[in-house]
Image (cartoon, rainbow, N blue to C red):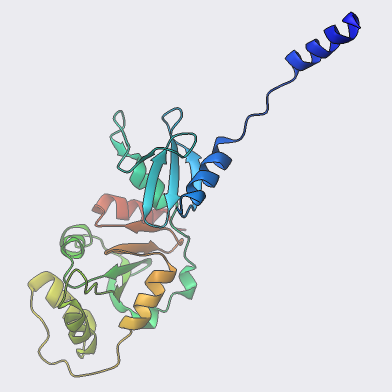
Length: 236
């Protein structure tokens, strides 16, 4: 009997402890709390996990009990890790399936590189993108999908309609974004604005500007020229 007890104790002590996967625990507890979860991954901080959810990124402990909302930076590289994760979690776009007929087409130089932008005529960040980031970029075709966010800019839809219905909506867009001159010769016409809203929802583009590159990758916001150039050049 003593020999049997000794063997059982040895087996019990030697047996590995199978702890629950923290990701499973976090997901279960967040779902129980009514939180939608798209993805969960370890952050660079031990014991802290990054949770991708429809509205952005959350950070939680290894049980999903405590939640932090904010930006995580790497102070060595000065990189915003939260933004990098947010960008990488955006869905890939089938470039060839985009309805380019619903966009304003601007060709600069050879136009051989391609970029799509969801933009609001009254969005200050969209103006910054146009006036600073895109101004010096050449040899690119830019497809601008008018995406007026009336909740933020009450007159944006009216301006978008005027620009689209102008005889030359590429010129009308340039005149407004670079010279604050709205077309006066625009009539009434059918616009793709409602379709653009539906498309943006499908692509999870919630704000403006939203950039899409020909490889299907997305970047939100008024990013600098060098970032755009690097992405454009990386596409085969």
